[in-house]
Length: 176
Ligand code: GUN
Figure 1 (cartoon, protein in one colour):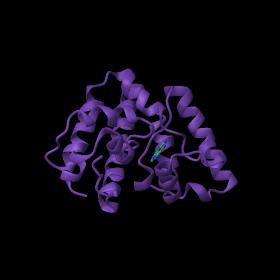
Figure 2 (cartoon, rainbow, N blue to C red):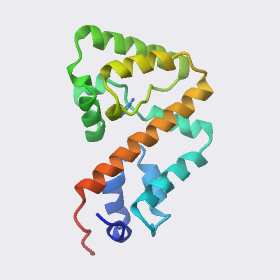
Figure 3 (cartoon, rainbow, N blue to C red):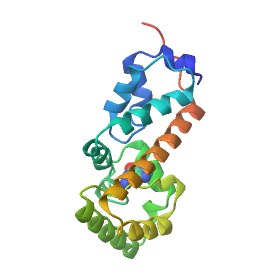
Figure 4 (cartoon, rainbow, N blue to C red):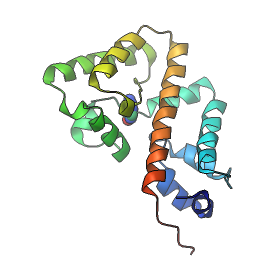
C-alpha cells in the first residue's frame, strides 16, 4: 500500500484499516485522519506518536487501560481484538501450563493493584518467559517510570501493527 492510497481514504475507510493500531483507541486514528495528507506511510506513525505525546498523564494512563491483560479473561473467552489475539498467540500465551497461567494472573493482579492500569509489553517481540521476567521486574518501578515504559511498548505494538498493514496491503478505496 502506498501513501497515495492512504491519502485517498475517506474517514470510514481510514478507520476500518487503521482503527486498532492503538489497542481499542479508535479516537487516536480519528484524530490522525485530520492531519492528512501524509508525505509518507511513516508520517502516519509519527502523527500517532505526536498525538500520544500531546496527552496529559491521565490520557496516557487511559491508553494503557484500554489494553487487555496478557493471558487474561478475554483470551480465554475469545473476546480479544484480532490483533491482540494474534500477538498473544505468537508470544506463546495460548499454550501456558496451568501453573504458568496462575503465575501470570497473580503478577498481572499485583501490577494493576500497584499502578491502576494493566501491564503492557510488545508481546510479539517477547515470549512467555521474558514476559513474566519483565512483569516481575517492572513491578518494582515507580508509577511515573511505568507510564513511560508502558507507552513505549504501546508504540512498539503500533509499529508492528502498521508494518502488518503495510505488508498485507489493502484494496484501493473505491470512490463513491
Ligand atoms: N502486547 C501486545 N498486545 C497486547 C495486548 O493486547 N495487551 C497487553 N497487555 N500487551 C500487549
